[in-house]
Image (tube, rainbow, N blue to C red; front, side, top):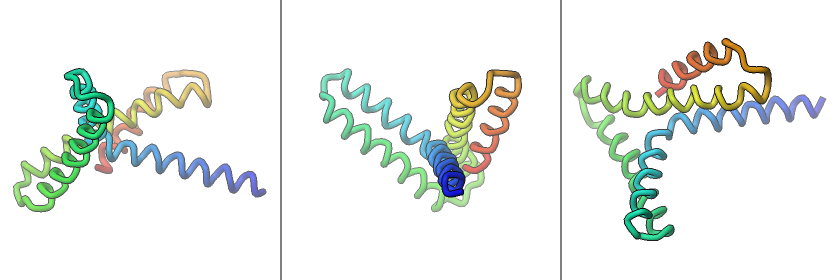
Length: 124
């Protein structure tokens, strides 16, 4: 019985981890792109990772403050789409990568992937 409880709790933690991955997909992607660009321009690994972390955190904070401060529906919609797009891609990718670990690939892999992508994007 305890094994079943641990499995359910582990699966729930896994789902929360994946959802958090979708929430922060845009800032993490921008931070990684900045870090790799800085490393390729000669800043070194530590400098590139530090710059990438600062840019990712800065993007998240600026978008959060702009979303809360503005009354323009267009600007709020635009900020939401900037975060919803990568979250949807992350949700679809998660299903595509984990589906073959559980069952054999079928057409349902893509149907469930699109549904999860829509759910990830809608929760942004």
